[in-house]
Length: 219
Image 1: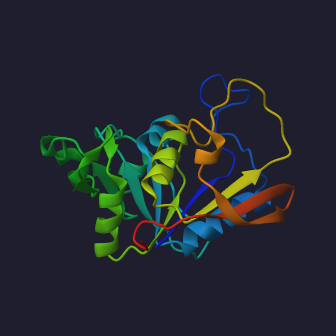
Image 2: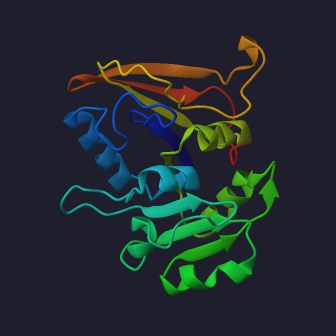
């Protein structure tokens, strides 16, 4: 499985220095992100991203395929009015949740797939989700999560490759980190990366690295 979280300019949401949803990365970087969405079987985000940005998580390149959309939504808070739910009849959409099945009805009516998964540390158990995705024939996932989901994915050992875009822009303000969660106490406990490449993408810089360690499913 190729699990690759990416952060093409994470939108700061505490005290933003620019409007949420406005472009951070340049046009060339955004095109590359959409080409990757075409290449991967699925794309995954957390409910926090859905609530903050109401994304489509589709591929906007003409003639390219859309990835299967996966939303990690422990308590099933995805709005029925969100773009993801409203277009679930057009693009396969999976809501991974630990919520009571009595809440599923409106989402099923909107053509979402709702998967019941075990809970781990207050969130959807990502290792269990990977097993189920593999059984469903989904062999690669592009993770475009917020800081909480990105940390949970790293801590779960399901991340194989990390891509981070750096734009030549300074925003200021109280911006969020692309990796939040519990974090580590000491530098030598950090998730180590290896085989780093630095790629110029238009006016932006892409840092691409592999996670140094065995990945869930390959252990």
